[in-house]
Length: 126
Image (cartoon, rainbow, N blue to C red; front, side, top):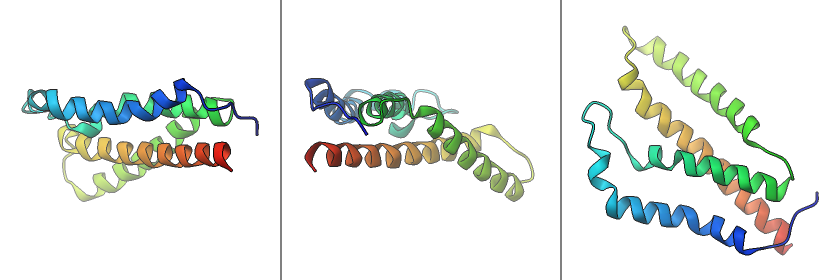
């Protein structure tokens, strides 16, 4: 497995999530409740950042894009969750489903990103 050496770009990749969380907690708090029917949370706002980080770390570690695999896995997991959710309710309302589904997607992406960061550290230091 051919990996590139540590660079300033990679250092920026490690700093981006921390800075996004700090900025959203400090300045974005009023916007989380702006839409009363469709509330936002930090997990939903970080999804695009997580996609970009997974894409970049996939290229750094493996030399190819790993996002299609993540999309397939996340789609399957959300589909299983949707099936279980549909069995437990009489009427389906997307408003009641989108927040737990987005949190599930957030957890899947965070766990995958942490695994990729640990793998990257292993390829650099060991």
